[in-house]
Image (cartoon, rainbow over all chains, first blue to last red; front, side, top):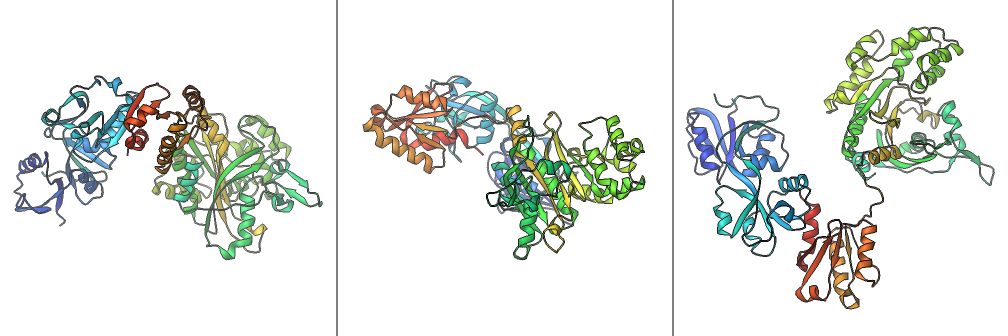
Length: 195
Length: 403
């Protein structure tokens, strides 16, 4: 029989807790530290370790039956997957932050400014809802350093504890949404998750 | 129009254009009495009879008949051109307007009908119209039903023309007109044709006649992802044109009085009027002006907006070099822009942008040039932002692109 495949993060803030979550169902994952596919002892289950943003892609195409992914990824792009449930870990927020001494203090101050982000769609939606016109500068990573380099006036990024923001001389001014890890499955699949 | 054209190409239709001035005999005699009256036709200086296209289907059938040896059959083409009708101009009814047509010639498969329904739904949704119904019916079915009432063949076409007027005249007058042409059981026929609450009920009511054509069509359409909610089976919908023989469509927007925004159907015999072979065709025309009126009513398009997103102002002669270079980098990056053509005061240049509703103006005066910066002013809020001149393109793009 075809194994049940579950896609989780290969590295990053959700990986450990995703593995713990799966173990709580009695799965004995054999090689969780290396390799792209982890087998499970005594069970016909395979764990796929993939890039965070690719998890919904695997699930919507049916290459994986289930996935554990942050809600922030699902908010950013439309995927044909259904959310099975929220998992209560991996909590974080998508926020807008500015340099400590910035004149930008409220949403309306963002009008006409440059905001760097790896979440352009979520940001665009937020700005539109608040009737703000601003220039969205899309960057893939290390968003926090962009104001320092004169590339942007504000950033929009995920934060958990706010440490990284602080380290880069930034302060949060607005919460856009809260995110946590979710269990997702293919939009056409009605498989039961490990029981 | 761009959206419509892209959608047609997405489904594999190729563009074709046909002549505007047609020999009168190409156009005349295809549409029925009403259409014939509305066709422009005249004699040219050499005394030849000329007609202007009343729709795009007939000129295309003529084109296909002359060229089918060199075309892949079945042939799928789209055509976006003007047509002419000698009407009294009124809201949604013009003498000269655009039709956007798709047709498939050379296949009798009902996949064609389903595909056309799919394209109608995809296109209208893409345009932002989501309150439409595709009314469908079949000429074959009407003919069969009329026959079951003992209506002779000779009366079928005149009857269809009367039924087609159902939205303009009431039931009583229809019965009267039917009686005028010698059909005495008009009321019974009409009640038989009346649609029920759902497509399924209507289908079940008419099951004594052969409804398999419409059923198959609807099944294919559903498998192509066309939700049943967009489709309304209306056995009384007739389409006045004579050349239809099978499935017919008419699309209306439910919250508008504009009438049909798309219409079309299957024509088995049109091509054989132009060549000795028989090719069945099916197609639909989108009425461009009516769709635009609908979009304007709903504020989905803004009128008279300039195409430009940016006006690059020119501070003075010495700043011109920088302005031209900024203008060049914007257009090279694919941003719709223009440069102010002259050396007027900045205020006058802003007014120009304001009038043309250009959202951004770019300013580079001596200070900016010295600091290698550029100031971008948003015309609606008046807010200005000075950024390094190397970021100009990214900054403007940041407003429009995020995907």
